[in-house]
Length: 265
Image (cartoon, rainbow, N blue to C red; front, side):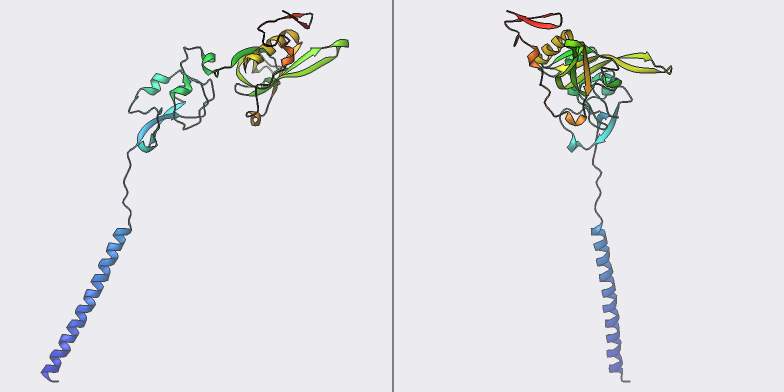
């Protein structure tokens, strides 16, 4: 073979090898760049410890170490009124013993507007504006077998003995919220202790307070009928106004004698 042809073949082979080498390296480098670009950059966001309810807390609950805890929250989710460890590190100790004014759920941030100091008049603190708290005696037979609890809704039924010893019943108040139940321990037939309420405190309007005050004197018995929780949105301002013969009471005085109501001007 001629020397010139041999040189040409050698140069061609070297050029082919160099082209293949460059192609492999360039494609491999591109894959590495693409893989690096596909990996997202993880940035850990700073958090703030927020005081939350450790479990569901109904109205009247007392706060303690078992009912509160700190949970990490992102700063962007912090709202006004949240208690943070940064601005109140001693909050758990400071709030121990306070009373829940409005129900709270597990992991819900604790807010001061939902709490009331145990040294305050608790009932007046949880009573909404314009409402009145009034107590009435109950028993197992008149209190739904002892199943009525605070925040339940009830109807108040008046039972009265009429002519010929015929009992008459009338629902005088509807969908009334129970604020509190006075609990007393009584011995059961089986020797076990059971909690039975003797007094129910109801949330009433001023007119409803007058109705139940008259009914307590006029009726032979007042019974509470427990309502479904689904009825909570129904009106709770109805009342048997016909018991109030004196109207708004501004110019008349009611006299109850021998089970009958009369009005004195």
